[in-house]
Length: 181
Image 1: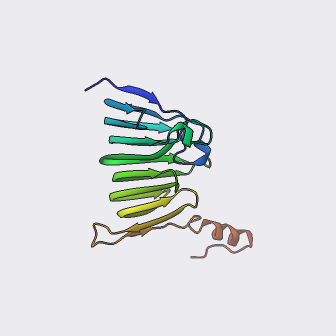
Image 2 (image 1 turned 90 degrees about the vertical axis):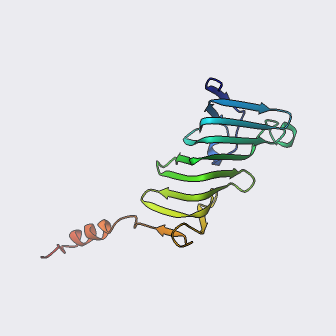
Image 3 (image 1 turned 60 degrees about the vertical axis):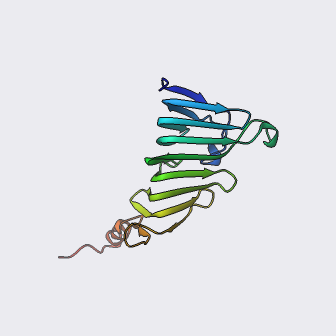
């Protein structure tokens, strides 16, 4: 295997619009770039970082548009695919909210700003959890869809209230109503 390599792949429009001007930094045991085809393959303990987003896995494929297809003339990522046991996704929003995911395969499609998690998929935001065989997450609209699952072929969703009832208790205290035994 080749030594770890760090590669910056131009300007990348992946995983969120605010990150559009940031580079993708990939560390792996092996790397193969075919600029004529616009394809890069990374193998062996792959870790890709772009801004506050990190993807890890055993294998990654990055497909780029040709420079003349891009509005700014720089190549842009068309599709990014990560496989692993499992492949993992970590993202922190500008508000500090964490999004975590894992699956056998994670695919990002730039044209639809969509993440697809395939095979034993899990997506978590805060305490909220979404599991199934296939999870589709739309970045622009913050919409999630799922299908299938290991537990009798179903999707499992666990949602927690944002305030956990604490806000109502504070209001009761302000209005002179206290908890009574």
